[in-house]
Length: 233
Image 1 (cartoon, rainbow, N blue to C red):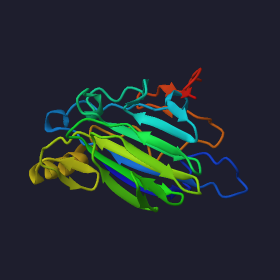
Image 2 (tube, one colour):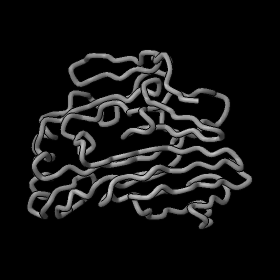
Image 3 (tube, rainbow, N blue to C red):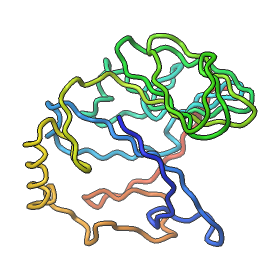
Image 4 (spheres, rainbow, N blue to C red):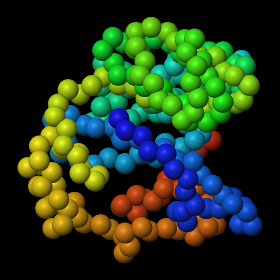
């Protein structure tokens, strides 16, 4: 898994305030696929905010984007995603800590890669070791880890998953197992654009007043549905 962080002012996202800056913080997280699943049919799913569980404790909020925590399970991943396999222990959690908050990060499975990134706030102690942003640390997966926040609010990102254990060759957005497969992917993209792009522009956008929706390649529109409750106090 890889993560990239940036600030976006793209017109792809409607501005909340047209008279003031509208920064948006983004993480781009890629999950690789095993060789057996690299040529499966594409699948697109919107993960609406209302459907993503948030687990709350004293001074702590954990957004469960992938995986499960304390009985709260993230929305279903694409059917061939590495996260869809029950033995891969994939988790993507966004963790917010109030000043002075303490929280025990529960253990995962033996053999899982587990990384914690502190990207916002002040000092945080991870099992007694102090770190300051921006810092990423590799955790032992099979033991619980105590997080103790300092005097400022802090935000962390947890990424974990069992290794696929296959060769990786990557160039731009293409991730395959061999250099030959990368060249084949380039050739297919140049000749067919992966079967054809249904829109007139490479970066289609919609009007500012369109509201929150997703438009699929077949023209179908999807809008979020309000969830009754997603938090555990």
